Length: 470
Image 1 (cartoon, rainbow, N blue to C red):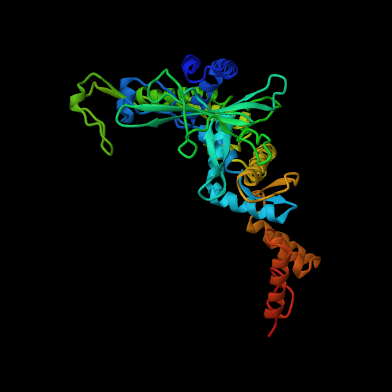
Image 2: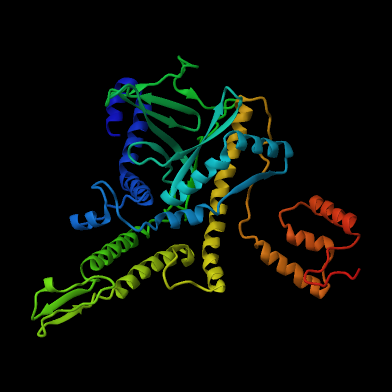
């Protein structure tokens, strides 16, 4: 990105803007280590882990030269947490706004995009959602954006004095045109304007980019109807938010263990290939005079012959090492051990619940930080709706992210609770229906109770009780 500043001397000679771009250039260069980490986390998640195998091992495993070999635990760690994060809806004391939030969410197909956002945030430590105005459909639009990895993506620059207040944001992407030509586009987002640049597939020389709908407008104003700045439309999702400007990947501490696990698997396979089988031996005769095959007798007509085998090496220690490393990954990431399905390490139901407690605690923590980010997304959306649409939404109304509850007991546990209440004679029909259907609204519960009474003329029959005598 160092070449952008030189190119902009022709595209934007004004001193203030050039200084801003030079500052961004310097910041991005300083972020090189983080960008490399983003690439590494994505590669490891995808199984690209640069394991080294001998030619014999590759032949034995029937791998092509470009194929990776590993026992990839990274997706388990990431997916276990990301899959527990599902936004159900948004709450707001203004019902009109609440309905709009639901509408905007549905039109941007966020039922799917939110999963991608949560996965990327957990995997990389940082990810973003862009809030834009859809002129054609006259509503806000949400799109997930990966963190900048040195080639493409988005990045937010924060103030040194206020590390949680964004100063500006950047988005870079590549547009392929023709066979070889590639155009690199860069947008800079400030609270009050958006600056757009292109290299016109020319490499170093950057020029101002003009939108078709506003061919003479540059930079694009980013203000409301009263001329007030709308703010930066890129919302940051931080994983493991520790009060710093950027988050921490769930894979940060996993990568060294993943390397050790891959090494242990390769050693185990190598040992199995070279030492874990029996080697027959013979003295006093030629092996060609014997038969050595499954289901056959081993003998020699030479009375002086001796026949035996060298036992294969025991692989238990290597298997234990492999399982131990996988267990360490489970412990340091607070992922249930049962997710790794380790041989000989099947836990009791109580131990499995205890193991799930750590994962649930992580999920609740992310629901707070990611929930705040989703609320910022909807807040920006209603600002855009007021600025470019026909609404006059009250921006002071509080927005609340409502998450799906994945900790509710299964049907068997619920039925057991109801049965115990029946035996004690301590629950009404309404209470039992509420227990069996915790996701129902009070109105739905009342309707079900009325239906039960209409059909049977009595409360819900006791579970396990004998049938009525006819």
